[in-house]
Image (cartoon, rainbow, N blue to C red; front, side, top):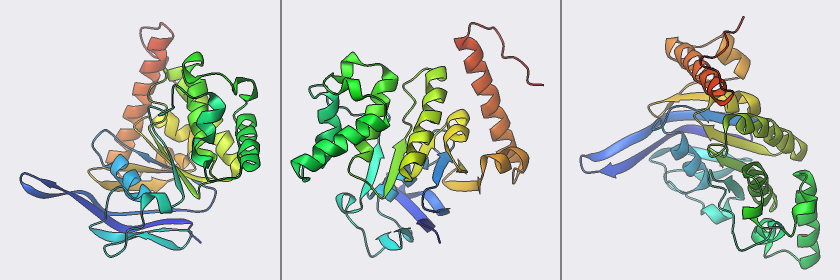
Length: 264
């Protein structure tokens, strides 16, 4: 049975020219413990879908269910704070005046003190930063800050985790390495998650299922293997090839090469 189900959702924004539809009859399903990804170019609507799941954008039509609970429809809109959905932003949004432990503890203010302390310790162990509890974000690397932001999002035990371009501020090599680390952490927790990115390498490193998006629609929702070997149409095939080439070029530039190495 599907744990997360987006059924025929449509979203529209008011513009000077009237109502502009940005998401068109989009469907998406994830089973519990799966990691999904919305992959596409800027402006394709992927972050809008994430915001709709979080409860920040109302639906024009369709429904969103999480663990068989109706979160959003035309007639019902559960408030974001009542959805038990965690979110990790691309700028990490860490509090610079709080220590690592206090940043992780921030979302646990309603818990008992002993439970909070235990949960913070668990999260520090999970991200392998037990020795950094009393340090401040500016004293740590970008990759370490990213793991702290992940731990803070995981600490309240959300039913679903949303990750909005979480690696975009990091260099190419760090980005890919951390994508694998995040996948390992999420698998340890058994948490269902959705990642939004324009970077194919990140998507393929972290996700069980990927939705290639274009103009507010998911063109293909499939495994990484299927996207590579069984693209549903020419758009998906061209997109996957183009993104792979761009990733190779970026990696080559980071390593001081003029051109990417050809794949055999």
